Length: 273
Image (cartoon, rainbow, N blue to C red; front, top):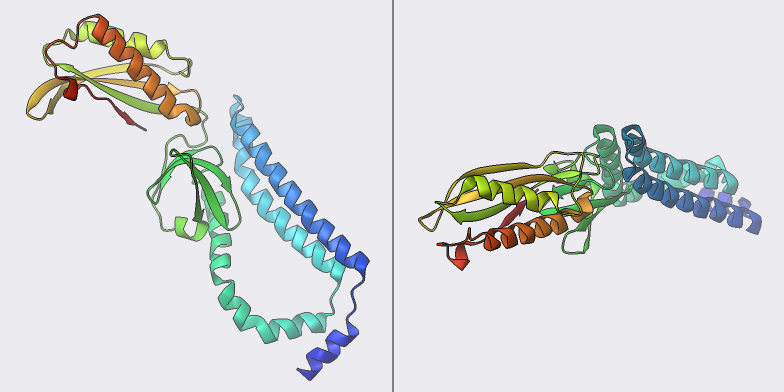
């Protein structure tokens, strides 16, 4: 301890060094946040190669932070003996305290290298269903569909099963299920369902609209299931598009008398990613 104390007595830091190192760390934070905004901007681009540039943003953010911490340390310029002395004295304690942080950083690197998901992707992980808002060094923030932000440590994601609905694409496929009596005029039902889907504002126009019909049994009652398969323009509007199509289709079914012979409790719609 005496040797460490003697080294500390010789080590002096000027206000200029403190301010300069603080400025480097602040600049590092600003650049990191700017890269995040750039990632979200690229996500909304129509050109595929521009959207793919997003895959490099998490790695760049990690690199920026490593470089920022390094330059801040260079500005402070502590003696090598002091660094070794502190590392020797507090190495075990720091190692135990930073164990989880190291796991999270390692998890962030794995998530980036495997391209599990990126900002803007619609995912389901650890029971959380939503849109990836940001991938940080320590954790991933997911904007859940109940309008809450869920923070998931990156280390937990290494062992979790992740469902990615769009894998970097801005559009996403959704299914809307509607039910009609078993003796429904299926040709008319399919036509009305397609009309309802094509009239929705948030529909991705470059992707096909598919209507499938099959039998379904609900509470021992045979029904006709109308499954509408469409693509939403942006994953953020998944629920809104499904609701819009459901409302339009039900109105058309009712106007054309297709609900005759079916109970109100059997008229239900289900939305699936």
